[in-house]
Image (cartoon, rainbow, N blue to C red; front, side, top):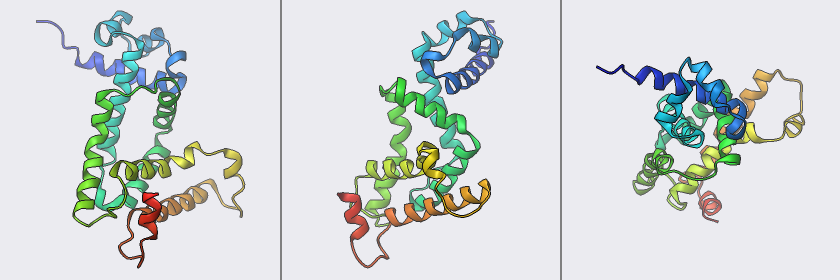
Length: 204
């Protein structure tokens, strides 16, 4: 009976995630991944083909792990945004991996698309039921929510340094999180605003 490869694959993917998040695709070394995983380097090629395909597999796996860690709730986009922000603060390696993906591997795989599809469909369903502003494409809603969450991590440190007042890093992060939640709430729901200004902003 052949040995179970499940644990070896898990160790390889864990090691590859760490390596890609730290060094990107171009800078990652297959030798380091194998050493960290305590596995034979040849298994990487046997299981995943090449370094590019391994990166794609790691990226899709990270999206699945993220979806499990931060359940999506179309009816509570502000709450989702806050939880996603907290996860990114706790796991900056996920942010780094995503940035490397955008820079070095901008191609889109079918598996990556499918990882986002349920969220987009959930937004569309909430719009159809009148629980969310229906004027924006549900894809744009997701792009805006994720973009607002990511803004803290992708903005210039020089800009963040201009925040007024003397606060600790923890206080400053809490203030930004609160501002994020307010922004997502305003963007996503204009049912109580008395006009269509939010919907107009989303649809233009």
